[in-house]
Picture (cartoon, rainbow, N blue to C red):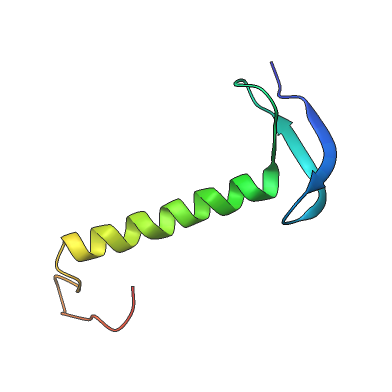
Length: 64
């Protein structure tokens, strides 16, 4: 069953599409995407630190 979508006001993005959540209420799609991107960036940073902070082949460590 597809999620119900509505246009509502978001505090961060203004008028935006919101998805009905199973737990109740609505969530802004753009806020959800931002949260997922932040999670992925943080996960990548933690893994880089965990694995030594540099390339195992060449030792490059200037950026992730």
